[in-house]
Image (tube, rainbow, N blue to C red):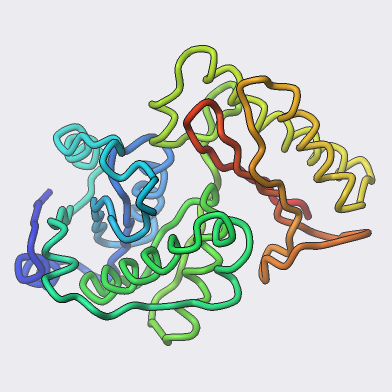
Amino acid sequence: MKSVETFSELRKARNELAEPVGFVPTMGYLHEGHLSLVRQAGQECASVVVSIFVNPTQFAPEEDLESYPRDIDRDTSLLEEEGADLVWIPEDEEIYPEDYQSWVLVEEVTKPLEGAERPTHFKGVTTVVAKLFNAVQPQKAYFGQKDAQQAVVIKQMVRDLNYPLDIVVCPIVREPDGLAMSSRNKYLNKEERKAALSLSEGLFQAKKAFQQGVRDADQLRGIVANRVNEEPLAELQYVSCANPETLKEQAGEIEKGLLSMAVFVGETRLIDNVLLK
């Protein structure tokens, strides 16, 4: 596995890779969810490129940019074990040089859910992902379902800007007790870790109800909210039952839905979701 930092090093190394190239963009502190994306890319592509970049422009001033967990040595060791061919670890100044002024904006699908709570977030996400795609030029790029809105937004950007690549969205990887894997789980103490199970348990209860014939969007949202609200350490920020493609909130009887949520457990903000269909 080769490791590079600059655009020029990346271009040289990229030109030496066998086609097709699969790309997994990450912010590092890798867990099994990230590694599952690397494995799927390896199964479907001749070469695999992974980026590790904690993107400052998708964090608001009050968010956890400075404390976001980092461990480059561990990350690169894990990627080598998984058979990645190339890892790109740029510095902030490489991605956003002095006097940087250009941004990629996706409109409607960035407005609800995470976009409503974190208004500047997706401007940073779409801009950095566009830059990563331009640099790596993959045939396929791999994202996790846990960041469900992000996957929808990136698909929209790829369609709108005519990127010649496929976006592959892979299933959420969970701990044995159901908690969705996340780099931010590291922040949770023992009591908070237990309280965090209310997210997946609420979603699974609602999914079971949907499978048993409950189709009312408000009722499904209520099942999730009730479970989270049982936990003193958990504070529900939002729960949504949206159209999985447009992310527009649904009412009344539904045939399919993206049931998603954001919850503060102590000081840690967690997200999770399930697809209903």
